[in-house]
Length: 112
Length: 114
Image 1 (cartoon, chains in turn purple, yellow):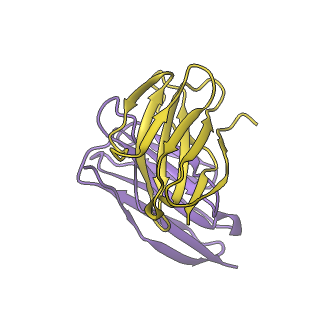
Image 2 (cartoon, each protein chain N blue to C red):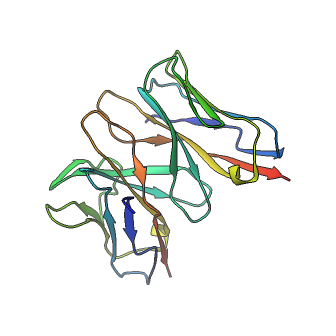
C-alpha cells in the first residue's frame, strides 16, 4: 500500500528558530494535508494543499505541494512554545479516494 | 461547539467484552471516517462511511470490528470480544463531501483492554 516517509522524526530547537519538515512517497498523492496533534487530543488541520507546486501559508506556517506530487514540506517560522507537538503529513491518493495515509510524525520540542 | 464529537473519551474493557465508540460529525458533514492510532505512531485508516452506507472498509479487521452510520444518530464503531491488542486511540473524522477532502478530527476515544 501507499506509504509516507516523514522526516525528521524529532526536532529539538530554540525558541525563535525556524523549522522545516517534509514527507516523501514513492506514490503520487492528489491532496496533502498537514496536522498538529497535542498529547491526548485529536489532530488539528493546519494546511490543505490541492495542486502540484502550490505554496500555502497559515500565519507562521507555510506548506508546499511538491511538483512531482510525491512530496510536501512544512515550514514554521520564528517558533514559539505553543508550537510544541507532533506534526503529521497526510495524503490522499487515487482520484476520489477518501482514506488519508499518514506519515509517522515529527515531534517538535522547543527549548525556551 | 460545532466540532466533531466523540464519546466516551476513555473506555476500559476487560478481555472478551464489547466496546462501542460513538462519533457525531461536524454539522453539515455527511462523510465519516474512523482511524486507529497506536502510541508513537501515525493514524491508520479503518473505514469510511456515508449515511447508511459503508463506502470503504479496507482498513478494518475482518473479524470482531464493525461500523455503522445510521440515518439518525451518531456513527458507531463496535469492537466485539476485545483483546489487549485492541488498546489504542480511535479517532473519528468528518468531511463535507462534494469534492472537499479536508478531514476534521474529533478528540478521540482511548480504549484500554485489561
